[in-house]
Image (cartoon, rainbow, N blue to C red):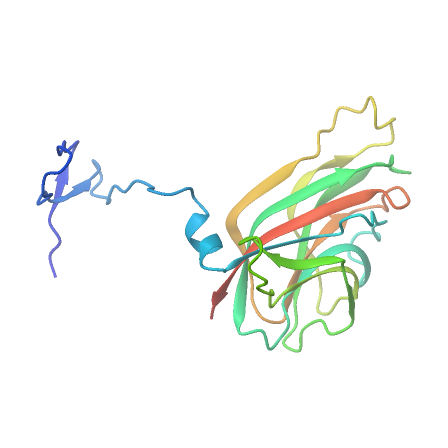
Length: 210
């Protein structure tokens, strides 16, 4: 099948029927524009969810410890969906006892993670008020399965006073680059423990059929 394209700008007047060829760039790629905000369609269709440790700041475990505390996003083995991780939010309210690397770790086992404690805000719909429930769960603690690996480094946790340290924790856009299949998980990673009850974190994800 041949799809014809036209390279360059095409100006079409309002109200006019558009019979122009598809627009392409100089390399022959199809050029498209967004009509709605980036995440609108999946949020409106009830496929986007968010979870956090809310009003319960936690202390993280060391590195890849599978007896885990912090915040983890768990996709059950029988969920029937892939969890596509969009954004991760981080804030540390207490100084680290020792300098740490902070990032995101991931892991997988066919049977999935079955022992965990769900966070108070464990998986709410981005379509606020819809009452839709996520298949995946944001958990404060879990017995992780498989072998976790460090996926993304966000920065460093420092030992200076939080009122003066230069590290700025914020919302990290992973742009859907982390896909957590059934049986998989993602979790906040710190190479040393954070300060007692010091971490607030959140996950924003999309659940899509396999």
